[in-house]
Image (cartoon, rainbow, N blue to C red; front, side, top):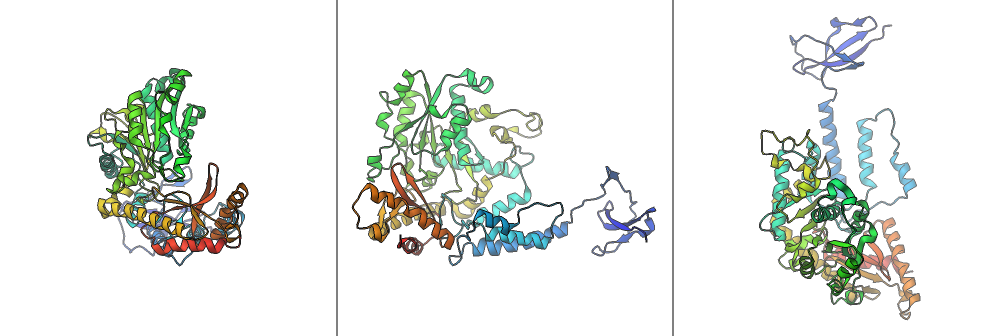
Length: 553
C-alpha cells in the first residue's frame, strides 16, 4: 500500500485545496478541492516552494477555526470571568494549596498540542481557580471592581497587538496617549503643558522620577555614570512606597542614601493629622543641613499622596516650599491618592501638587482602569524626559521620516515594546465623563466614612485612625480578649487574630480583606473601598463575617 498523505496549499487568490503525495512524488492528477471551500477552478499555476523542509505556500493558520475558538472563549469569559465573578452570591476565591493547584491545573508543557476543546477547559479552570478581584467583596488590594469600558479597551489592545514606540506602527494609540497625558496634566494643574509617559507600573514611575531627578541635577551621569556624581541623597517618609528604596538600589544611589524622615506617630494615630512626615525636622536646621555636613548632596524629595497602608497624604504645599528654597526636585507619588484630584470635594488632599516636578498616578487603582494603567507625568517642557532616556535607535527613530517625528514617543521610555495602556483609561473616560469619575471617587470616600462609623459602634472592633482616604484600618478583638486589661500581653494575642480570620475567609471564599502590622502596632485589618458595585450591605457583611469567623478565638 502506498504511503499517501496530503498537503494544504493555496493558489494566488488564497483558494484552499489539497495536494496528494505518494512515494513516487507529487501527483498533480490527485489535485482535490477541500470540502469546506466552494468548489471552483482557478487558472493559477501551482508552484510548490520548499525551504529547509518547510513548505511556504500560503498561510498555515486556519483563520476560520481561530475565529470559532475566540468566539467560544469570549462566551466563557463573559459567563465565568464577568457574570459569575461579579455575582455577590459566588465565591471570591476557591482556595487550594500550591501543590494541590499544580495537580488541578496540569501545568506541564508537552511536545504535542491539545485540542481546542481541552484548551477551553483550561480557560475555565484558570478562571475558576483565580481570585475574582472584580467581586463586590474583594477589598484586599488597591484595585478592585469590574470596569466594562476599560475591559473592552483591553480586548481591543490584545487583538491588535500594538507596540507604542513610533507613530507609524501605532498611530491611534500614540494620539490617545498624548490626549490622556494632556488631560491628566491639566487636572494636576499644569496649565502650560509638560511631558509624560505611560509605563509598566507605579514602581517604575517612581524609578523614572528618581533617575530623572538625578539626571536633572547632574546630566553627565547618563554618559559618565556614577563616577560623575558626588554622594547623592534623597528624602522620603517612612510611610513611602518600598519602590523608592528599590529605585535607589537599582540606580546605584544606595539604600543608605535614602534618608527616611520619621512620621509623627503620636499625631497620626490620634487621627488629628494623617500626614506622613513631621516636616519641622526637614528645614535648614534639620536633615538638609545634616547631610550636607556629611559631604552628601541632597537632590530630591519624595512626597506620598495616599500611603499604601493608612491612606495618608503628605503636606505637599509645605514640602514644595522647602524644595524650592533648597533647589530640590519634588516628586509626588500619587499612584493611589491621585484619584482625589478628580473630586472637587477631596482634591484639597493634594494641595500644592501643581508645584511638583513630577507625579506618579495609577488610574488602575481608585479610577478602576484595567491593570495595568500607570502614568508618569513631568512639569518640564524642555524635553528633559527625552534627553534623559533617549538612545536614538536608528532602526526605529529615523529623523527623515515622512511625518512629524515628534510623535515617535518611544525614546522617552526605558522600554522598547510598550503597551498602549492609556487607551484603557481613555475609552473609560470617554464613556463616563469626568463627572461620573468624580462621583465614583466621592462615593468611595463616603463608603469608607460609613464603614469607619460602623466600626466605632460595634463591640469588639476598634478603629486604628479616622480614614483620610478609602483605607479603613481596624482591629477585631474576640470576646475572649475583650475584658482583659490593656497590656503588651493583650496586644500580642490580638496580633494573632487577623491571620487566622484571614485564613478562614480565604478557605471559605466569602470575601478578601488584607491585614498587616504597622510599626509597633499589632496586626490589623485594612479595608480598601473602591468599586461602585459595593453597597452599605457589603460593609455590614464584612464586619459580621469577621465576627463570625473570629468569635471562637
